[in-house]
Amino acid sequence: MFEDSLIESGNKLKTKRLFTSILSFIGQFALVGILILIPLIYTDALPKGMTMSFLVAPPPPPPPPPPAAAPIKIVKMVSEVVNGQLRAPTKIPDKVQMIKEDENPPDLGGGVPGGVPGGIAGGSAGGVIGGILSSAAVAVPKAATPTRVRVSQGVSAGLLIRKVQPNYPQLAKQARIQGQVVLQAEISKDGTIQNLQLISGHPMLAPAAIEAVKQWRYKPYLLNGEPVAVDTQVIVNFSLSGN
Image (cartoon, rainbow, N blue to C red):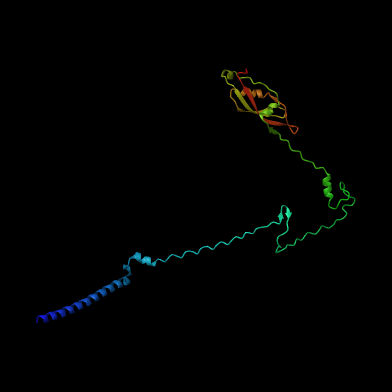
């Protein structure tokens, strides 16, 4: 009797466990189906970043590579002239260009009756102008002489014919001032001094130097046999040992 009770209870337990398993399987299948259908029905629930990544178009394909450059064909020119002499061609040219020469001018015949003054006996026609031009003397124009030239101090010193010594200023002597006074001068065509300008020198010595140089006289400087004005420098020395 105890065994029968155990067998009956075992059958009930097996039946109840089978029903529970089937019910659990159906519930899990329904849950998985709901999880799959929810994203398809409610698309707003999907992450936006993931949605946008699906909608981005792929980048365009890279452009095709540029075509290869055409090879440069170098044509070597062979000259037919070597050392000023025409050499024989090495091959027959494909095309020979025909050169048409101009016709000779018509013969005027006889020239001018009686000849032309200055012409040559037995001359040919068309040689009249050449004979006249060759017989006439050609005048060579004479180069114009400049009105003023610049020479060095040594050249102008060689042209000096009258030199007046300057008066040493008394104040400069007392102050023991000495040295050189350099002047820019223009020697005219007749040898007189013009346009004196001070270049360097002590202010106490310059007036005496200018006053003395104004009285100097030079020989005219000749260029192409004609006297011209000269620009030069004049140096006046002031020394206490010489006074």
